[in-house]
Length: 279
Length: 170
Image 1 (tube, each protein chain N blue to C red):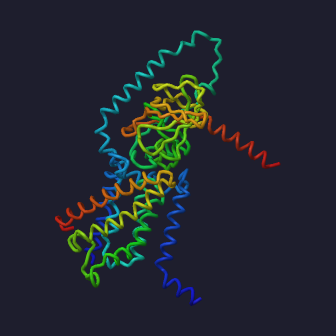
Image 2 (tube, chains in turn red, orange):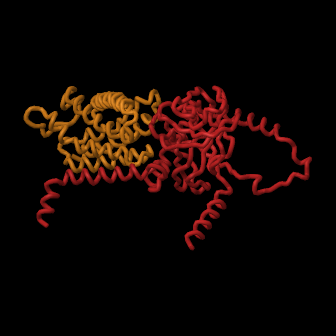
Image 3 (cartoon, rainbow over the protein chains, first blue to last red):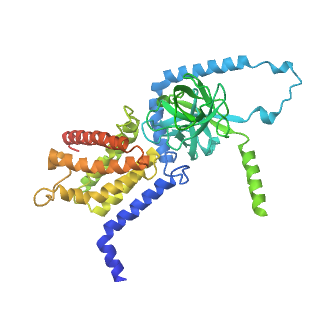
């Protein structure tokens, strides 16, 4: 017993180091996907309200570019609206409400954002009280932004597309080939599209959109345009450098995508899971 | 003594704000990513017990992590840096011992001492932080480049901050 006490007395500094370093590293490796801890991120009330106050002051400087962006988005939506044929004249078309609307959009303001880290995060001024949950997608007027990974009552933390763990199922608008989008940690303007087979025709300037395979984003949200196409000689896939359509350095207002049918889907999955376990 | 405490606490908040409001958003190049807040740990009085320095470093790192959403990364780097601090101080100790009134500043110890002390400590901190963030040796030399360039930027900012503080006598 005295031996143990003597040991700790002599080596207390090393012991303290091991304990604190172990604790830190536990946080690091637990952190890798969802913020389960929930407190030690910028969605907590201290960091959240701090960033919000700061943003309330500085956001005025971006009003001009914010306005331009919104105006462009309005124009695009007007064009889309005009392109939809008037279905009221065809009463025989079946309207199914369930499939009428699958996604709901919640407006949010970016109160903190970084682009120069290896792993970038965004803090939003909406949280649980506005109906946000983990796993919801975030899009900007110009394209995809990221996915919600932590929520508190009034704030949310979003894993930016500029994050080494971020993955997005995307497709070529023309041709419809599927691939995966990742970010290599270098430039906030570009990302990588992989797993597009070399049998596909891909040209610089082609548009990339979200595939809609997950419930995170609706199908057809713009991701970016093809910048450079490189075939990998030993494999049968292209590596495509794409220019992201979202300007991450100037994020102002964004939309959080809420999948109305997500709950139904999860309940169904749980029921099936439970039924299987019950056997 | 109370004065010294107040100064340290003020320093903590000032450099925390500078870090999360300004330096976090500097986006010149991804190689320039300074972490000036470590100056707070560097400038803790030399006689502060090493265990206290480590606990304070851990808390500081966690606070920065909270604002950066990098749970544990800065804490790990700061704890490692605090663990090395006694050895670094000993290594750069002037002939004999540190004066009882000695402070880790340019004013008290001179520019060469401060440069080598800050340089070593910042390098240790950045090494842990950036390699932990990448967590692969895939881009070993790029990360090393980031460590060195960001480290030089951090040390430069530390020197600048000390000169400003010296003039203002804080």
